Length: 199
Image (cartoon, rainbow, N blue to C red; front, top):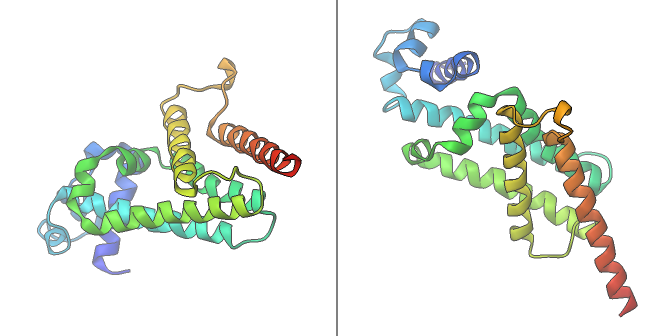
């Protein structure tokens, strides 16, 4: 692992342990065991470092979704597994998740981050296309449907990691919420197919 990757790994670890506020170039350098100036050879500033963490994780998320998409099982099962990639990430790494989707200044810090975000969304679009072809998702414009599912996932995860949904309240967590959404969409798709066959 080269120095840049070690710095990113340590920044992610600090994020997980103490949140965004504890991540500084000095703290990361100290944890890795390099000079205080060493991170500046790889990152312009703190935002650039954080953007690197987000870019790396977005790339991993996109790969996870693509792996689910090309895996075994029905289109419905692959869709659920692909979307579960985001749920698992958000619930396991809440500080990274918040950084990834709630910090526009981080996006501005690194142009490569926009490409990584686009790749992650395109992976979701691929899942949605597969679901539509298999008849488990409604035949609506694909990008619009993917955006709706994507936004719903983020909203559900946000609520869960903020502690706003609990079993005691009878509210579904993000995984249950996504299952409900997909079941409703599958019913809508079947209803639409039935209407076409009856017309």
